Image (cartoon, rainbow over all chains, first blue to last red):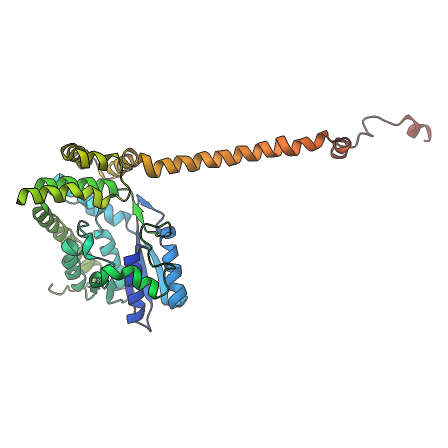
Length: 235
Length: 126
């Protein structure tokens, strides 16, 4: 049995991949890294931890795939309607990655998808508080189980990676060895959150985003149901 | 109390997301209203732009906000590569070139001169 992991190359998604390799000892772990315009060196930044995982669990256990999502990302940004200022948030959303990951899982008959979502990253809409449940329902409709195995152990991520021999030192974050994919809109994203939370308050800001994400995921659901001639399950 | 919490959360957002502090972080900490005004202006401009132009705008924002960090290092690297090139050129022409001034070395490196200055004895034997 195989498993796919949304892999940014950072500590959280590396631990998610390690847990996948341990949970599915006879299967392969497919590491999916998003790439589009505005991303810096997606392949190179994920190289180090990909190599570390291969060293510990065996090279044959991991398959790496750089997923090009430019067309889908652009489509999701350009076809959205409604509040213009809210739509800016789609520029840095991971909706297209989830769409492409679902397509990959369906093509390769993978039924489990992991990511490295952690609770303290609550300002990022793709993480647990906004995206978590929506993404889980989205994937479940196509028979894919979406899980965030690092969510409950987020405080010990670095120690767990070190204990497994994946990282060479117990503290990696913020060091020169800490690689992860960076994208051009990250500062625009910070400014957008600053503005949106100040204007609406965090609770309203979250609700507005959740509605937008739900609507966009519905569009993706219809798209993939048509492509794969699948009957969606009730969320 | 509620409004204070809301304000504090939104004010701290920039510090939580920016990986390395920029001038905007310091401005936002000292004068939150000014930080918010910059954020609102940037987001409003971004919302007017089409997809491709918004990405270019994001690059511009990075340039404007991260000048003390990332882009300075980028410029430093470019200057360093030029410096290596010029150092190489100086070494090749300036240091290796000096060998030509050692007596006898120049003649070794030059083309044979016999053709240019013909030996009159050579023709006499024909």
